Amino acid sequence: MRDPKWSRFYFSIMEQKPIRILAVCLGNICRSPICHGLLDHYSSEYDREIVVDSAGTIGMHAGSPPDYRSVEVMQDHGHDISHQRSRQFRHYDFEEFDVILAMDSSNFRDLQNIAVSDEERSKIHMAIEGTNVPDPYYGGEEGFENVYQMLDEAVKNWLKKLTA
Image 1: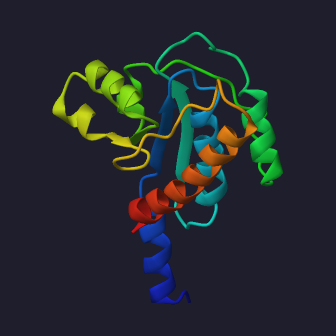
Image 2: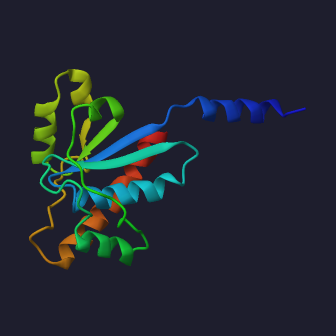
């Protein structure tokens, strides 16, 4: 006979819907792939299904892998994001995702402008409240490390909040 406490625990986990998180930056080749990779990595620590993806507000890089510097900084920290491919944010992402994390205020405004309802707007958040994650594309290697450090902490905080 099964332990009733275990059964209640098991069924409460099984009944929970997955948490679906989308990371968004401009081109989906620098910041959001790093955030996506970190969300994938840390989500394995939770007894909850967490679905992660990333997108860009523009489609200029659609189909491209992450910037080689994003791949390198993630590899330096033990993460492989080389399989990711850029895609443009689509309006139906509002239906597919529970939380949409914008990397900076410009991305946030772009997403707010795409949203057509208060429900859609309520899903959009800054990845780091009150702080822009700087776009490292035109800078050196240290910019990618800075983005990694910022998002590493932010992702842990988001997952704690969303799984509480």
